[in-house]
Amino acid sequence: MIETRGLTKTFTRKKNTVEAVRGIDLDIREGELVALLGPNGAGKSTTLRMLTTLLAPSAGTARVAGHSIIDDRDAVRRHIGYVGQGSGAGNNQRVRDELFTQGLCYGLTKADSRARAEELTEALELTEFAGRTVSTLSGGQRRRLDIALGLVHRPPLLFLDEPTTGMDPQSRANLWEHILRLRKQTGTTIVLTTHYLDEADSMAERVIVIDKGIVIADDTAAALKDDLASDLVVLTVTDPTAAARAAEEIHRLDAVRDVTVGGDRLQIRTRNGDKAIPELLRATEAVGIRVEAVDLSRPTLDDVFLGLTGRSLRETQPA
Ligand SMILES: Nc1ncnc2c1ncn2[C@@H]1O[C@H](COP(=O)(O)OP(=O)(O)OP(=O)(O)O)[C@@H](O)[C@H]1O
Image (cartoon, rainbow, N blue to C red):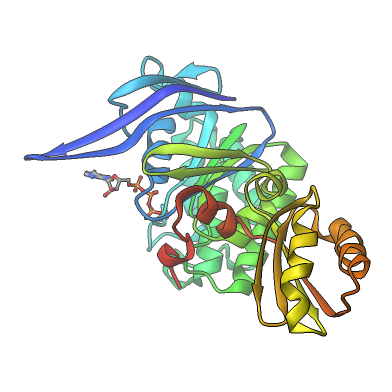
């Protein structure tokens, strides 16, 4: 559905040059739900704007829904929906009319356009607001309208640029319910950008981590966490003087990547923490050391980013 090779965008203003996207190769298959994750200024929106033909690349190639973003922009546009960061809806139109007009813009007949507007207001639970002007909608309702507008022409591919930024957790969850339901019904391929680590983790089937204009990781969230970050097991031992000896024993285990000792606590970075715990306990018992408490924490995508870049994504996350 999307194939890019060496996709690059350099902005030049006066004497300033910004290499926003520096040679991105992507292969996204039909039906995938992919999140582009990265800190502010990583190049996510610029990538999306190139894929949606809003911005011409400085170098590289891309095919989107089977068409070149350079030579066949109109065909690309007909096959995609794009929901940008700002709202695409005008303020003074009624919700139903906004959808109807959008349908006409895409070449639907009046009757089809009207039917599609009804269908989408229902699908996105906007029916009770269909007669209201856009300016009276809440943030979450407006975002649902934006998504409906992006879907008017039944695109097989939908781009969402930070669809939930600034929304409260309940509205975010509600919007996601709609996105996932629509996707299940229609099989639409969805590519979105997000700052929210939990969102990328729980909703996307695939996470592409972008930093400084390049792709630094690309896999399922679970695989990224498994490969690039470790589980943390903390063992509290009854005798602090024995902690160093226990650490030595634990270090020998295959799954263990790192052990640090602080007082009576051993911090163990390991693969598959849940499976490693019995082994860790056996290793400490074997040298006669008793464990008082065990605590296991799973890594987050932030740990993945930290491991890859030495920086935390949270530092750049909006509140
Ligand atoms: N029109 C422009 N002119 C000059 N520089 C630009 C322009 N658009 C984007 N940039 C720069 O390109 C870089 C990438 O920006 P982009 O908006 O793609 O990042 P992003 O990952 O989407 O960030 P955010 O999460 O904050 O939206 C940034 O340094 C940005 O300042």
